[in-house]
Amino acid sequence: MNTTCHTLRRLALPALAALAVLAALPAHAVGRLADINIVDRDSGETLSVYQHRGEYWVAGRPGARYAVSVRNALNGRVMSVVSVDGVNVISGETAALEQTGYVLSPWQQYDITGWRKSDAEVAAFHFTNLSGSYAARTGRPAHVGVIGVAVFREKLAPPPASVPLPEAPSSWRERRELNESEHSSLERSAPASPAPAAESPVAGLGSAKSQSHNEAADAMRRSASPAPRLGTGHGEREGSWVGHTSFERRSARPDEVIRIRYDSRVNLIAMGVLPPDVEPVAQPQPFPGSRHTRYAPDPS
Image (cartoon, rainbow, N blue to C red; front, side, top):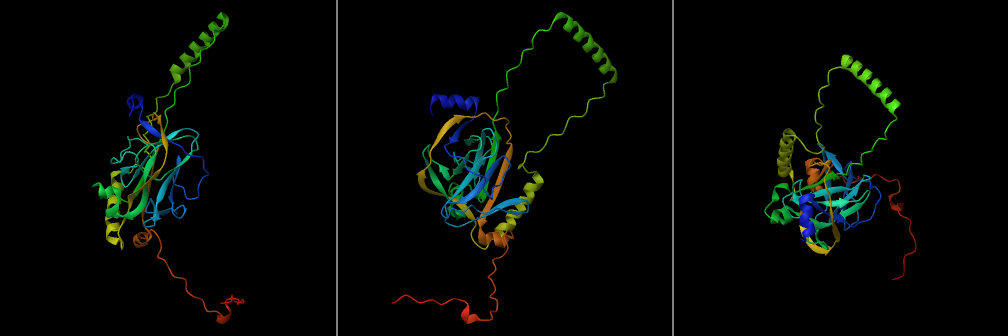
């Protein structure tokens, strides 16, 4: 890393600027400040999102490559810190909110297709069994099955202060006398100061109670899964180019945290996230021998 990058690390967290194009709002997006989709890269399908017990779920197809698609929904730059299976997708570290992420320009969309290996390559994401996941192979299997995106707004420089023009002497004296009169009236009738407002919770950061509930639900999920749980593998290397930029967060706390769980379709059915697959029942037909129009066959 060059000297400039080290300087930026002290001033503001360095981040990767995604070189991507603008895209329209997709149909299955999750999020308020950013639209998040999970895309099956082999079929081109944007995976449907299901809500179950307060969480978002998608059904992954074992063996399929996938992408985490992020679209900035704001008219200003944002940084998205992205984790898969509890691992930062850029650095490979156990994910934390203060780590680096992808910087998106206003309305920009970018597909994160793998674990970043350099400014020009990633190792492709693909759905695989838990034991074959990158997190498990690096000794961190506890958080397999979840994709997280923490969105940070950018801190902007304050506008320059305006300098008032000097007033005429007579106007200044009149204004001073009026201000003194109003100040005296306010001192006699000013009400008590209201109590400070309570701090609002940050979206996506759950309480200890909800965390305990989720841990219990995870235990039930493990016991109910009829097939091995899905994780995300470290696939083949492929081209993916990014640049570097500086980004100062408006706050140390994210403006939004988006969490999407995933597993195989058969496991989501077993958990009750999806209804069971039902084979269509054949209906009786009055002319069963005439259901298909007959045409002349090709010669042999």
